[in-house]
Length: 127
Image (cartoon, rainbow, N blue to C red; front, side, top):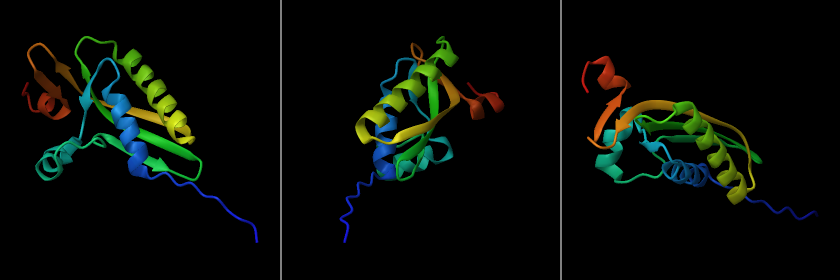
């Protein structure tokens, strides 16, 4: 009988690594929780998986991030750096191969005035 050694890494672990890495990436203001953000704040407090969804297989993973960027940064550069840093962190910490890191920019935050502009507020003429 052959002995099998199995290591499984949960979706939550991968999501927390991605969320922490994204939150520490220069030019990223915060993660976007989308529609459920208000509900999760009321129920669970600070959630390191906010704005992150993952698909974890036996040896590969795919990451999907929803972010708010700082106003004035070159968004494409920030997102490429974010993709690289998240991929590197997950691969180094878990040994999983990251096959994709998708980034959706859902808003822009102006730090000095603490105003937040996202898709919904812009569509509704609020800002």
